[in-house]
Image (cartoon, rainbow, N blue to C red; front, side, top):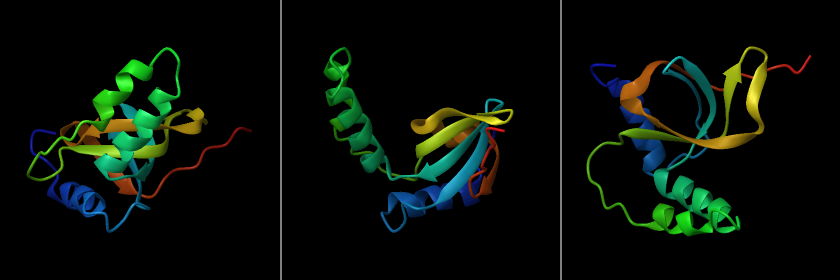
Amino acid sequence: MSKLDELLVEVAALVESGRSNQMSLTVVAGGAVITGRLAPEAVWRERVSEVLAASARLSNFSAVFTAVTGKEGPPTHLHFHVARILQGAVGIPETGGMYRVAIEDVSAWTIGDFSYSDH
């Protein structure tokens, strides 16, 4: 998007304020359809850090996600948890993943998450 969608920025700001972590959202970014729940960035970073810390191979990267950002201004990214990339009738990964999407890369969006069928 050449100009940020102010409504989407407002939705992200409300999630960041901590008043809501149950917002389900589906976006199209770079041709991919991503669906899931938004989380405040701090919560998202904490969860990613926990997953990395539990990995023997990736634990060294854990600290990167616990660093305090201290940034000001409106949100620039959406932080999805329990999210899937929809590909045809399949959601990847099946268990849900952690995705960070730049708001400027979102070309379309809708409230709610799309379900998919394994049949």
